[in-house]
Image (cartoon, rainbow, N blue to C red; front, side, top):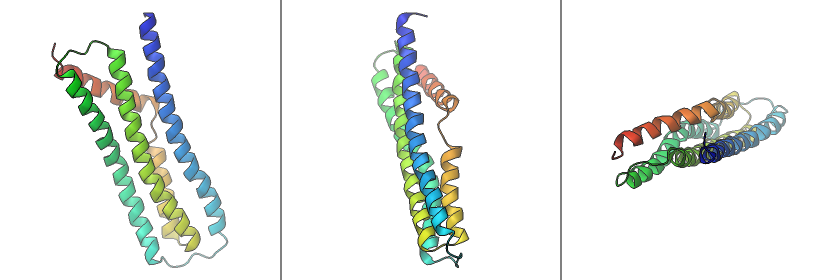
Length: 173
């Protein structure tokens, strides 16, 4: 392994780590609020769901879908920019390509997590204001979506490899 490859690999590892830290911080913020709001909501007896509870449930469901859609849109947009830059010249530096793709994945992750976080906060706030099991379920579902879609190292690397291979196939030789 050359010295350049080692540095490129370190850069890629750093972007992956930063992506995980940002996603973890967003998740931790919602989880901490969940603990606080759950404790506050437990003081009141659960009531029938209010209209706003249904709005919160809808927001969380839309947020869950938008988390996936937005991640894809942002990442695909960045990949399209790379595709355009490599349409004129061959891909010479594989590490640089992977680094750029990691940045695309990071941008998509941040955007997607922000959407579901907002919906989750809304559901938790509503749970405190109008305690109901439906509101609680929506708020917990928002947390579960974030946990299940958390950007693990293998998930990020698999996505990067898949996108890099597609770009290599499309690049002039």
